[in-house]
Structures are given as C-alpha cells and as structure tokens.
Length: 271
Length: 333
Image 1 (tube, chains in turn purple, brown):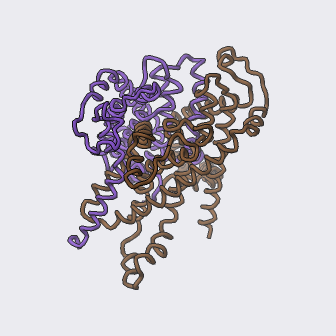
Image 2 (cartoon, chains in turn purple, red):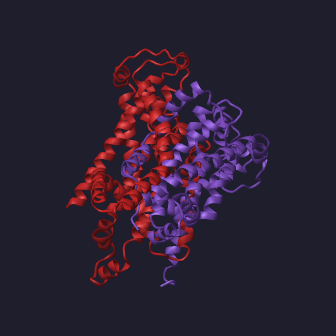
Image 3 (cartoon, helix red, strand yellow):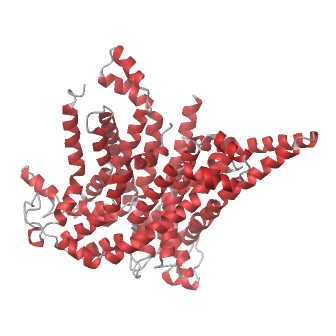
C-alpha cells in the first residue's frame, strides 16, 4: 500500500509547491538586487543575491516590530481575561439567557471591521484614544474575543462534569474550581485562543490605519504600507519586511500546527 | 458542535429555564428539604452570570456602542469637525437615499456579489478536492497539509503586497510566465477588465487552506467502514464521492460556506492594497467603497460611509437568517 502510493506523494509535493510559490517568490524578491528587480524574465533563484533589503528592515522597521509585539501581547491578555471565564460559564454553568449571548457572539463576528473602525473613531476622537496602544489593543480585541469565547466553550464543554462535582464536594467555590481545575485542564484552549488573538492583532491593518495612523506607535503592517504608499520602488526592502512580518505565522505553524487546525475546526465540525 | 447546540438550545431556552425554576420554587414551598436546592440553583446562576458578565459588558461597550454610533452617523450629516463640536444635523434617511442614487452603488454591489460568490465557489471546490486528496493518507501528507496553512496564516497585508508584485505588468513573474508561454502580458492591476480577477486570484489563494482544513476534518469524522462497505458493494471512486462522501459532508459544507460568506463580505485589506478598488470602480466592493468615503478620502464623508457599512451588515444578517432557516428545515425533515 505504502509503496504503491509514491505517486500520490509526488502529486502532493507538486500541488503544495504550486500553492506555496507566492511565499517562495516573496523570499526570492527580498534577496534580489535592486538593479535586477526590473529584469525580464526575473531571476527564478536569488543568484547574486543581496541582504540589503534586510539591513534596511533592521535599520527602519525595528520600532514597528516592537509596537506590533506589544499590541499582540496586550490583545492576547485582554482576550484571555474576557473569553476564558465566559467560555466556562456558557459551557458548564448554564446561565439563564446564555443562548442569547451565544447568538450575539455569532452576530458580532459578522460586523465588518470598517464599520467597527468608524464607530471606534467616533468614540476615540472624543476620548483622546487615537494613536494610543490601549486604543488599538481594545479595537484589535474585538476581532478575537467572540471567537475566543466560542473556542473556550467548545473546549471546556469536554471537561467531565464529575471532575467539577468532585471539586464542589471538596468545598471549592466557583472561582476556586475555575482557577485550579478548569483553567489547567483547558491548556489547549488557552494556547489556541492565544495563537489566534496574537496573529490577528499582529496582522491587523484596518484598525491600525484608521485609529493609529500618524502617531509614534505604528505597527509593522503600517510600516509595510508606508513603503508601498510612498511609491517606493525598493521591492526587496518591501518583501524583506513582509518576510520579517511573517515570522510569527511561521513560528506558530512550526510550534503549534495541531492547535491551529483545532482552532479552525472547533467552530465548524461536530466531534 | 457546541455553538450549534447552544444556538438551538437558545430558541427554547428562556421559557424552559423559567418553568424549571418555577418548578423548583413550587417545590421549595412544599417541603422543608427543598430550600437548599433552590438556593444552590440561584447561587449557581449568580456564579454563571459573574463569569459571563465581563464579556456581556464588553459586547455592550465595544460592539453595541460603536454600532450605535455608526447608525447615528448614518442618519446625520457628519464632517470631521462635527466629531469635535458635536454639531451634526439630523437628516434621516437622506444619506441612504444618496448612496442608493450614487453611480458607484450599482458597480459596488455587483462587484461585491461577484467577489463573494466566485471566491467562495473556487475556495470551496479546491479546498474540498484537496481534502479528499489528502484524506488518502500517503507518505508526507501530514507535513504537506501543514504547509498548506501558510497562505492563511500570513498577514493579509503581506499576501496582498506579494501578489501585487507578482501581478505587476512589466516585472511580475505571472506576466513573465505568460510571455514564456507565448501569450501577451496582462495589466492585472491597472486595467478595468482584469482588476477584479486579480484580487479574486489573491483572495481565493488565501481562502483555500481554511476550506481544506474544515472539509478534511469533516471527512475524518465519517467512519471508515462506510467507505469500505461502498467499495465492497462495487461503487467506483467517483460514485463513492457523489453518493456517500458529499451528502455526508453537507452539514460541514453548509457551515463552511456560511463562514466563507461572512468573511468574504468583509474583505478589505487585499483589495485595498492591490488596487484601492480601482481603476475607477472596477474592483470596488461595498467594504472598499465605505472606506473610500471615510478614511480613504481627503474630505471624509463619514455619514455616507456609515450608511454603506450598515447596508453591508444588513446583507450579512439576511444571509445568516436564510442559513439558519434552511438548517432548521433540514433538521425538521
């Protein structure tokens, strides 16, 4: 069986190569000399490559990367703080009206970010929250919180009721049960939600561009956008920034691939 | 799936919850041993809402209020200065009338429809085909499937700028490839005939992994002996797919398509980076139009932009309702 299936592997490798070609191309262009950039046909592999693009990134983009990291971590913390208890409540404590909250969380995910951005803009301009890290973290968290609650309640509904009853019999209150039993056994849920919250905050462009544009605290997506917007023809620097901005995605994939798949599917597939 | 369960539960919830509680209260007045139970019920309700309250407050402050502000924007005449001064005259539905009368409305609506349905169609078909392919579990299939996630995990801005350069008229690899095949180059991003196709290609590429992952796990949840039985009965691979696999995947397909619809309707980054909705209105969708009217303009017209945004929400909600109804009917039969 295994021996006959070599051609399946061959097709699989080919299809994956086609799919990942744009990613390869991004890396290739990031290493291309500026003088070769307009060459026709382009170099398919980075012969006489250069790291100029990357030195430009290191010189100009480090503060942006730092901001993105800060915003990402802030969004993760806020999301976990809000979503984990709510997920527990919806999965195990059966609050009256919980179904309505669930429905609202689904509807919330349908609101286009541009609509949210305008609403936030109208509010932030009054509160002076434009161009602030706190403002951007709050806005970015709206992408992750509804998803986080749904993921947590999916993960936590698998906790056996006996475990929670045993805790109650031992005299643990709801808070204690949550802290010392529910959270530790929901490690996978915490990882999944954190990964996605970080990735979404890191990748966010719309909120950054509308709520945080022009301040000193600009994330990496705005760093790339500024490059493109200036009609900058240094595509090796643009693509080098893009490669660097993709690092969190790569790290996630290597370290936590099964959680990623779990996150995508737990919202859609019956187990 | 929990969200589904709880959603169906939600329909009958309030009444069911009340009657159960009423029964507990009635019981408590009857016998002396009942009160502690009722108190336990009430105290678990307190705990339940204690854990849920932060998110409910959050939904109110950071969803409902911005949404309310957005509706408010759309029925007044706002400029940048009126945000600060607070003076914005009430205009009722005038903003809605003006966007419906705008020459951008028809192309934006059409582009949105094309963008959404073509994207979803290709993403779903390719994702499903790949899921069936990877389901055969050959050597390296796990690794390759993991690599397929990459396009979906990359920041949209990164994917969009990579595609911009790949589709560049004179220096892009795609045109170099076409010319190597003896075809003439295409002005992907700068010609009105091709700009929508260009953003569609990029968006389909980004959406394939999501469809692949969901459909793959849908396939895995089908017990293997179903396929074995069909194979023993002499069904061909093609027949097995259309008669068994596809019908069994229907619930998963439905939710995948709905999620795809909701996500694709909101797509902004890719189009904005690649074409800014242009040339002219050739790749302008409703989301792009809304942005053009507000932040993308030197003289922002927030009120019209908010009206466009609200139209977008209404479309999303209508489709979600159609989906929920269809699902109920399916479950009823």
